[in-house]
Length: 129
Image (tube, rainbow, N blue to C red; front, side, top):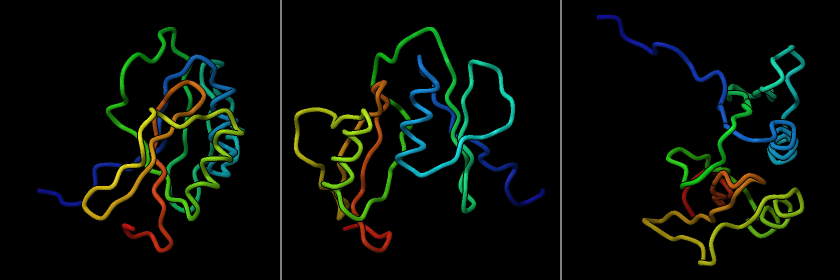
C-alpha cells in the first residue's frame, strides 16, 4: 500500500451571496492577493501564500442558516485590535457571550459580513494561551 498524502488543500471554498464583498473582507483580514486567473462570475478567489491554501468565494442562491460545521481559526497577537479591525471591515463578534476558555485554549467567535463564523485565537508564539 502506498503511503503519503493523496492530495493537498488547494483552496478553502466558502459559499456566499456576494463573492466580491467576501473576497475583499478576507483579503484585508489575511493580507491575501486576488487571484488574477480568469474564473466564472460566480467565483472570486484569493491566492494562498507561505504554503497555505488560497480561498475562493462561490456565489450560491441560498443564504446561510445554521452554524458552520467547518471554520477557520485565525491566530492573532492582539485579540481586541483584531476584533476592532474586523468590525471596521464589516465583520462582527458572534453572540453576546464572553470569550471561550477551554483546556488551555482561548478564542473569540467572529463572523464575516455574511455570517460565516471563524475564531480569533490570541497567541504570541503559535501555542495555546
